[in-house]
Image 1: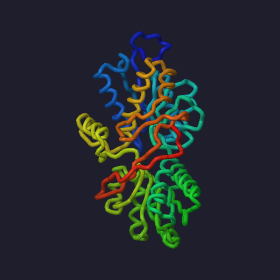
Image 2: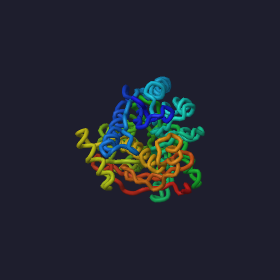
Image 3: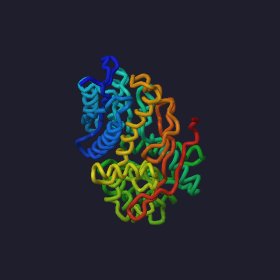
Image 4: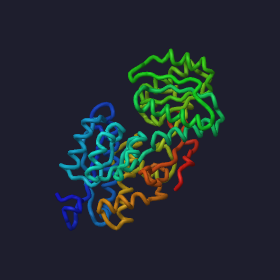
Length: 369
């Protein structure tokens, strides 16, 4: 099949999207969610005639969420499948590993990883369709300190890149307000007992505890915080909005606050439109936010191509950088900045009866659009 590469000179080429994501291992649900979200958008667009008359196609390769297999998967997408755009990876490590190849070959990439470095390497072909780590820190500290007036903040985080980076970003935002952690403690992935850390945090007199980790450890931390720190308010990374976390945390997650891009409980019509379509197609509620982010990635490509009047890759890339005020299926507005960031606001959620409930929105006011 001829693909949407102008070099092939096809009069009516197909636009091919490639999913780069983990389909095996512990992060496989994120890969499935990404593929389903993109597939839903592609099927809708094809049913309405495609993009500028061109039909869309979807292929997937398993990155395993790790560096070496991600490079192999990206090579297959680019050289074997000859994709026009890549959606993914959901893991920052995998995005960064494949980045040199994406830059070399000039392939549009809608990255779903949150690491700051993704949009700092100077690759003009990468766009991040997700919150970046610093945005999460900005919005959470805005809420904790500026809205609630809490100043004695403790941090408990994993020792991986996600946890350390999150803690560093939170510390930077606190410093802007003349504050620092009253306690900063860490744990390794796989740890189950946080007694030592909890006792140190209790001794610090903390009013607020921020947890930054993936679902299992964050849920265990939450349970133990309720035991050792019953009067301390709990806050967390976006992981707290995921169903996997809520199942493990149970009642201990009650009243915890986090900042997120998406929750299926959002009453916004654009969100509920996606929820109803997803249920009809896949028979389930889209609890994983990568569904919505992948869905929106396809529609961002469509919007850019239509603005450019062309599917030529440079024209689409340049039109993407000019997108402002596009409200996606997540209920937030996409505004693309020169570095390839697309989101500059997040929802504030609070867990009530084991479900995330939106209680507000925070914005990065430093971004000039």
